[in-house]
Image (cartoon, rainbow, N blue to C red; front, top):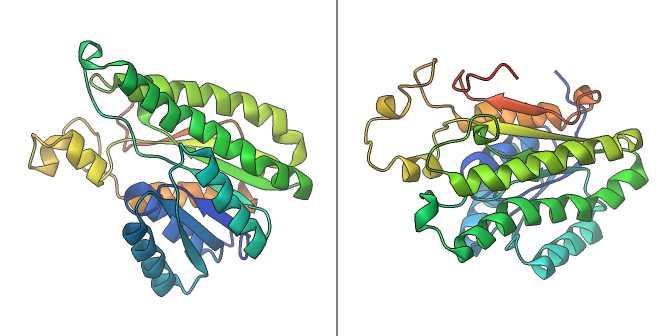
Length: 254
């Protein structure tokens, strides 16, 4: 299937590893001109080199703290100077720590809301102008199944990502007529460092996956395939949706 995004300018955030890296690799494989960012120079440049080697795509890595407005805007300025405005944004940031409400302080809450709600909202709005001017754009937020089925120990993530879901759903309706789609992908338990960190007490992947009907962890490339489709010309009539990719973990009907 031709997704129709060859030479589109794509920015994937939090792309040095895990789900972000997988999404970036998939978009590069589809022929996008790819910008990726993360907080650590050595990690993001290594990822950029790997993706370029594997796909032959044009890839540029940026050091960017998404919670820092100046850092984001400088990155966007460089991308648009080099390639023009962004066509595809995959908005992604690392999740906040686990914890019981009684162990979390104001700083924990502020960082979670800044990293997983405010900076994601700001990232979308900073690229929207260029998309609307072209009459075409794709915004995909990576969130979590916790917005449909809150996870017991992830009160910070449950709260921040639910807020982002409300924002994205509303934004989708406001920009739909301009040719811009806004969707969310909700990963379940995938084989990433984040999952290993959250389940550090379990050494056997089968134990981590025991509540998943498929009885295995998701592969990052399985989520990435959904992101690539939502970023494509083929997904032109899909917007405002929260799409679960979880092997059947979530029991909700909707």
